[in-house]
Length: 438
Image (cartoon, rainbow, N blue to C red; front, side, top):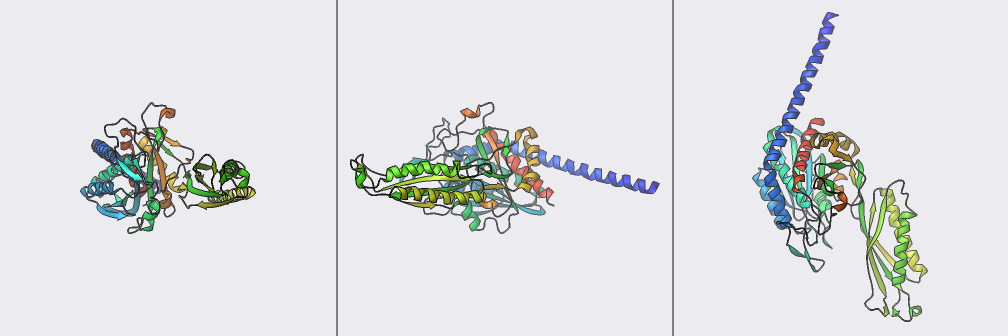
């Protein structure tokens, strides 16, 4: 009996020793990440300011791509360029066997003229839809890019400790490719960005202007909406504005369709299952006050979180528009593009990796949040491999979220203070995932 008892306690002692050694190793890795991230923080801020000051529109990120490739090469990474037009990929092979992990940042800017009074504010101008427009990183992609560059720099310094391979994916055209062009995550996937070596899992983040810096938000499963745009052409019969009975008025018909489309959500979608949005964003038709035109065109967006509801709303929109038009003696042609799928966080992966975010930011700073009706083409990667997409606070500490300007506006602003937590979070996810799937 004494022999068995002694053996049992010996096993416990060995297990405790192994656990202690592993914990010490984890603490050492975390300390090394924190030290390296702090060391390069000023440089990463400089990168962010440069990228912000010289933004480029979707599929036109030529200088941005060259800037990224130059940095990655200086870190000693294998670099691939020209993926999906202007995409850049850096590959870091660790010193130990393990999984292939993808990290993604988007690099394009928006046709918005900046109003934020910064020394490094954008003054760039480009052409968009045949118009001269200001160009601005009004959705924080400059922070995403600099964070991923910083992560690549830190991990390249810790290469020998890394299990497996890390793919740093710098993606163009997240905001949508120009009319008539392919682009973004969908084209990156099509051109094999997740292959050779094959990515096992992918992580991405998005800065958020109404979430305080130092905090992280996440949601399992559907975290951002599927997005589809629609186009409806209402065709009537042109006539003089003083004699509407002599024609068919597509303007009035379009107004009735706008009201009718609201019922596709409020009266026809099962909103206890998931939220949905149908918005008409623009209506064009007519040239004079006294001419009832022949045609009116409207465009809008659809946001959903459930594939079945998405398909149902498509059908409801087409039926509503065509039937209302028919009731007025007009016709309606409905077109719906395929858009972006739901940004879907794999529930098992999310459960596995949230503790890593909590250990990095502090458990009290990692928030389970509601779904967001904005859309993200990170969803195309998640259709191929398990992925986790989370939100990084960018609002200055102590600021009222109601006073923070939203994304896609001229006054959008996020603080440099958010960058270091993004780097530490990405690094922690790489090391912790490799340890957990060994």
